Image (cartoon, rainbow, N blue to C red; front, top):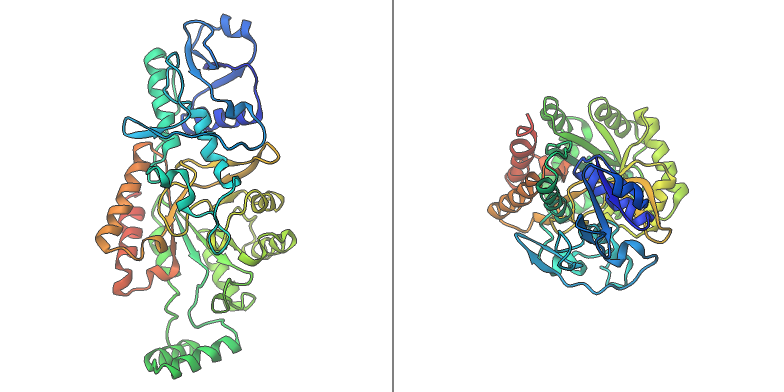
Length: 431
């Protein structure tokens, strides 16, 4: 066991040490403020503070973990071997940066609470992030820092053991539009018919009619293909459905239609089903709870996972609602139009409410991005971006999570790359 001496154990310090030493490194450790207990301890030990007590393993602390509220800290990002660091320490410190403070800054999404320019949907854009501005968005730096810390510990305390982890793959399938033609409602169906006719899309007009008459499969209905391939794989696959109103008129379905309900029930018999929370009602807690209960009535299971439509994360309000709704895992913590590690990690972590200074039970899943973020790239660049990020996760045996859409698997030439990544890189590679 590693004993860690600190002058004061506050909620920020407790949170980040449990994340780095516990969740990432799998170390057995204990925090103590008892100096006599620390001195008497004969096993591995370290101190974390402003100055060392003697010649012990020492990491110099930044003020961030001992503060409350928000401050606009001065940050200087510098190179550290193949990665970067900030909140530099003094020469007595084993580590050149306070990785606990830097990790807390990224995991708490401290920068998203500070004044910043929002995009047209009120979201925090990747271009405002420290990671993008300093070129480390494609690195799980929190995990890299943790393993650097572990390397230093091993040299001093070779007897120290950790519970090693292995890389995990999770595929999220966003089924916001599970059907192209079915269950659109009379008005939307008529609008679609007249639109096809006006634009002389006669092939699409015939296709729409055949689907509605039951003689042809809806083009977006790729669920049996997904289920078949996922059946024998170790990769976790979660399908997310939207039950509330869509962001646009085109996205809204009649979700109470029996055919739609049957699809959800069918998928839930084989895979985990999650909920896409309606963009327009993210601040409406009763509405979110109603959507949650509706999905649970279809699946006959307690809802575990959700994500916010359009990846809107208004901190801390939206996540407080998820906590109140008793949702266990959120998959919204990524940039909708850029691959990378929004919170700097490929390990799940708990949402820390900076305004209340409290750790919550809501687990945030480290999604690296969605196919939408790569669509403008060439096939070669798409695969290269995927491989770069995947290898970064693999290097720290982390959790690789990517978001696809059910529409990505429609069998046409434009979707070959998505079907390839899903099948060859994520499903088959996991066995």
